Image (tube, rainbow, N blue to C red; front, side, top):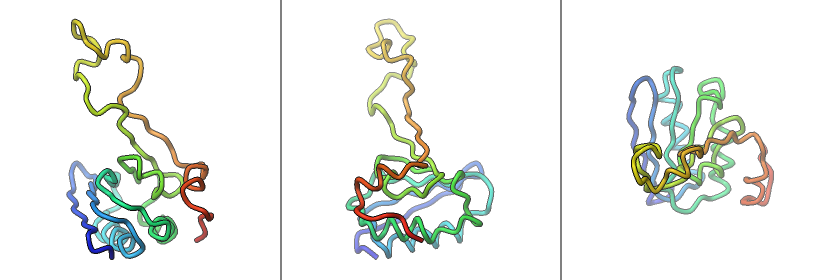
Length: 145
């Protein structure tokens, strides 16, 4: 495991929330897989926050994508938070990226709101990771399990 990799988790409203921090390599991937296989009860979703990850090693991504058991955690119940989730996420899972860090909580409806023109844009962008284009641009190989 990368010497600076850390995982924290909590269960809330039937979901498992996982905070990751540090570099993500093969050993880190196994640690994350083991945590999910051990703590996920088959209900709700698993949210993995990737915003505090440092370097993402291709071997770690491949290990996670190939060794996470879809019988324990189906991909459609797996959500990643942050841009780095695109590199790690298995096909069929989701990646959630905040479009703006600072925003008004009025949703563009308060008087003189600087975000009123952005009212029609969603605050979060959610993309399914069915396509491999993003991974292939960051990883010079194909996913092989």
